[in-house]
Length: 388
Image (cartoon, rainbow, N blue to C red; front, side, top):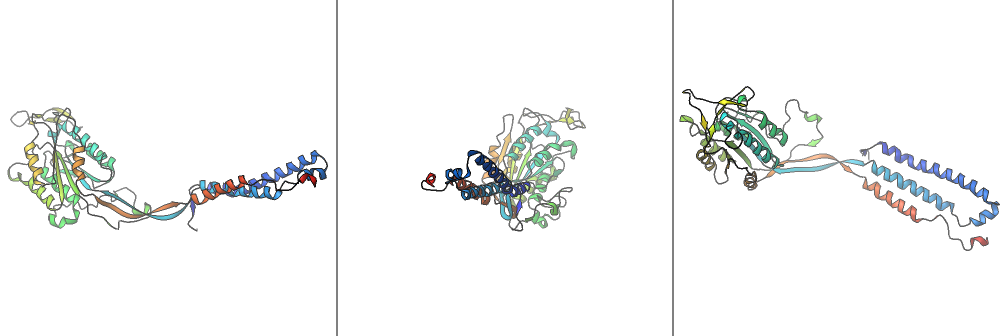
């Protein structure tokens, strides 16, 4: 019992004081009774009238009452002992790669494509409570956050970075490569050092700079087992410049095939319409400001490259899917249904040190003592006490 602790220690002192307080009240009551009995008449006559009264029973009742109240107060103090509890969560690992290139600022879907994509990504993240998400934004290069189960961080990351924070362009191949590196850091040797700076900074869930160190965290036994679970990349783009030109035309397809080789499912969400719209220029705050023109002075336009994106999805095999987001409201349940077909394994299995509640060991006996006290009378059985 050396490790016994109380959530509210002050109540322990109150419980210890209860018998003393009740004893003092009993003594005061006894003195008051003597004064009252003295006023009734002669002592011999009063004693015959009070022959059935039992001082012993009254003392037993007071003792039971004091113990019962003390035990109930101790239960309210919440006594606890250290214990072990095995915790685990089931889920999958998922990279949400959001295209934030200038073409994603075309407003042909009722708002800008990037705004609608961010809203859909936020709804999807909220609908995946048990999964770890690695948010990524890309244009001419990719910026990412490690796998995390902090949904607020994932949504904030996707919202904070835009086209002005990254090189120009829309390098889908680079985004797919970095996403694969994040999901499969265990096979980095197969990447020929291509994952340097992408998957080698730690695993999802590791403390970030400035966060609490391991010594400051609650005492736990670290992961003892991690089951195999699905790994998914959700690519959200309009396809503009996504498949590449010239020598790089096949790179996105090659990255998808390589991801599939390492057990990664690639799903594609196309954003935009076949009609398209004008690509805007962006001001220093990343907001659309005027139209973009090419070197010849022609207005630059963008439309959804659905054919190329379907080709990417088909390269992902039977488990891959292609979704499309246009002017109508996009239903994230379609993506959730597709993810439901994939295997969800244990993200973490660990023995966590927790406190085991013991209040019921005090509460029930205390309540029982109060019931017994209420059932005990204050008079003993005496036959014809008035005849004595």
